[in-house]
Length: 524
Image (tube, rainbow, N blue to C red; front, side, top):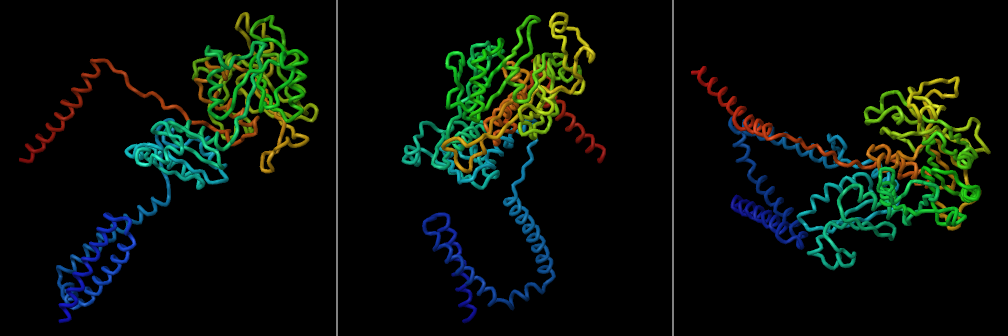
């Protein structure tokens, strides 16, 4: 009688477990019932098992049962190890990216931006459900880098109300919400997603004014010496680019976050320099990029050089010559100094990329400083370089040599220097947690490195953007940015293609088949 009752209890428990599984996967809304049924079923099965302990003991007393138990235990141990490894793997995120440009890892810039988040950031990806995995692979990298980000994946076709509320116009739109601000991105490229995060975090667009009227680089120019590519890069990081003719306006606009003087051909007039000085007195930020003379009879940039000197930077009347041979790696000659190692400075913190400066001059700190301003070098040429003072001889004959007795300076030569000074008082409307306002000036002895022709070198773009980030006191933007994927396609002729086909379809399989026949014949 007892055995019959226990048997019924066992079958009842088994049925309850199966019903719980069916509810769990078939009726998720009633999942709480599945939980209780599963536990009740397991209790019934356990009660039945305990009631049959004599029969179970007899079974395990046999030799075959003992061997089976040992095998089952070994299988359970292996399964337990695999479960433990998977559990640890789910808790510890570690991936190895073996691609040349680290295409499947977040760049330093993305990680720096994410590390500065101090409030929750909500990201909504609007795409068709089959496309979710493509976005999840990318967004999980962002979530692993910060605990402040959460991502939700929404199919606009299944949830049109939410899509309409977020003004979704196309599939693949990523909506980023942070502190009440919203930004939309329509691609899954890391550069675009990170730029969207930068825009929503910064909150407002910062304006950068490029001076015009003295032959400076044109931010709309598409030629080799144009600046339209760097202007586009600035736009991606939430900077607005405007032109400024100081001779007409007589003052720097109040909404200027920075002023850039990029390679003027002629000197500024005294009132223009005075306008820059007044701007610097009000926590201004100035980037001077002064090229060396490109003609033997070129007029010197006296006023601009004097302005740089007032801030502790000596702009030399020379041309930096680099005979280290590093330029050959980039297809250049000795007139293009290459920097590989950088002095310690926030602009070049953890910066390890090569940069090149076509026809550059020295811009070194004045010993002891000027007016309390002590500059610091952040770019310098290789030890096998020098600052050539005989510009006329270099431009006419192209043949020069180091001669310190004639004023040449042995390398490493400082090509860029930066200086900052604390502001007397904070600007109106400044929040208490904002960076302490400073006046910052950077002087670089070359402007061509940031032109369209120079941005083919990855380090040039990153260094320019890092300089802008430091000047605007947005240190979270100082980093190495995502790289473009290399084109690694192999171009082969029709003959080579045919050879590959014969090798893979006939020769290698035939060799393996022949080896098998030979081995079989010998064994016979």
